[in-house]
Length: 354
Image (tube, rainbow, N blue to C red):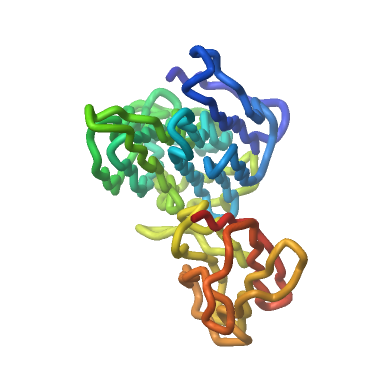
């Protein structure tokens, strides 16, 4: 992927996201029966999409770019089932391109620079790519600072091979903007564009003939922790601004950690769809009283997972086993879970399959 150094006329807080989902029947003479939805090159802060096909075929995608924590994250999940002897359904979750752009302007004072002037961006890529036999998933991550690029390459699991790939990589990109031994007679500004993103994120489930019959599997990638910018370094005396306003207009003091969370954030449950249980996660900027409840499509309360309980700062995770408050297993269908914390309320959708 090629990145160009440009100065943008408008704020660089841009999100480019597309995803699709489809199903088809294997006895349709090879002609795919499409059931798709696509968003392409639109501007989104975050979003999620879940869709079910005929007789139990499901796929979902979630994408999130958090400009307060300098994080890009995405998930995709696909599940296909054989519902009778003639039909094999195929699911696909896809996040083609989710990223944010920014332009950093570094102001270098006049003077002699024996060692030159360097700027650096450090960060971390964290995620899981998984597949059962008969399924697959792949993902690629990129971060660029001017001509320096961190790229995981395309990481893939499937189709005839089950397993997972754990991604946990640190990176540091460094650019020399003033050569060693240079003298600047006047202050100068240097504009550097950087881009952080997850690309080619696909998860799919396919019919697979082993010779003894058909099997299907699940594919997923989970970059909930995603790509994080954790560190900025500049030569002492140099100041800088962020066109997007994400980063403070001075050298950051962040060292080997994420930037602060400014507001609660409810994450998409995983897996989704699920059977028999799923994990619901949320982030809190500080310890607070929280409630987490599950409702059915009609708005009736199904399960109280947290009831005005103290939840710690940072990432919280709660498992729902698909049972109601009476301990009974609930039927397949669509449910909503709602977080209430410190005046914040948000709901998300999830699907239970059997």
